[in-house]
Length: 203
Image (tube, rainbow, N blue to C red; front, side):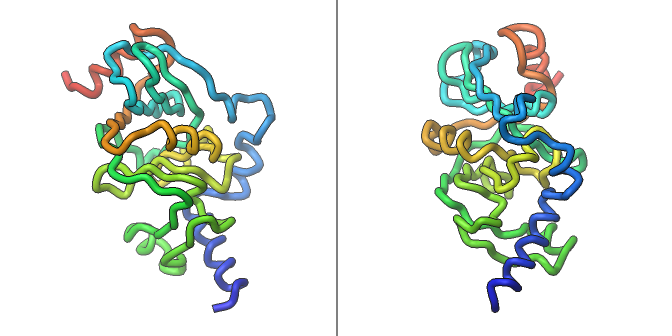
């Protein structure tokens, strides 16, 4: 198999995971001042456990809890509407330069996809690091398309800028709890965070 053939197949894979020309033109770009690379400290519910990861689909941000009531907040790309999920998982595996393999659903949708893209490849959509969640196909990982951060574009995974996922990777332990909610986690320890807790715990 020649490199050019492999490259074409990998580019086809990028189309499936969302790196479209339209998104590139309209999405956030590095350093454009719209918050696409905005890493900041945020207040969160003081009942959140230190070391936990909380993801708000509404905010399109990931919150890594550093201390009681305080977290590092990162911009993310979230799943498409039809692929959104909520709930609680744990980090079961961590990998540097993870390979990319399409899921069975992706292969059914596009049988021309490559079955494997090695880690570190310039067209690998997993980016520099990956945190594997439970026994699912879901990952928190980097990206080769940073202009898509801030969009709801993925097929279930949470994407981050590579420099952000490297920092998260280094600080996160195996077994860390990951909670994904639809509601906002922005603001202080009350209000929207309380609504998100209600969403997770049920009526």
